Image (tube, rainbow, N blue to C red; front, side, top):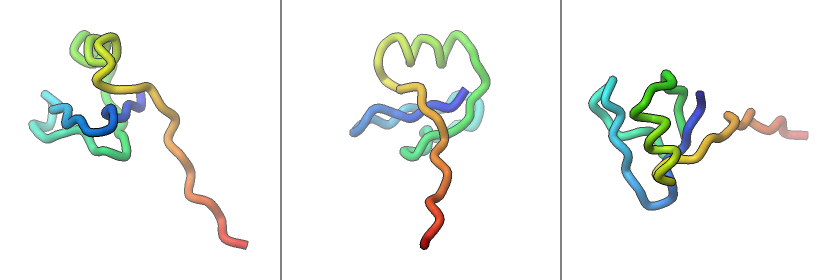
Length: 54
């Protein structure tokens, strides 16, 4: 699942020991991440593809 932290929040990733990237990251679905999602600390998102310049 791809998650992004809510603006202004730092959300620790227990697997890596670092904060979740503000641009979002793929994480393994677990009780921890489902709880963060339910609490509103993170949002589910789709990874944005870079725009092609014309």
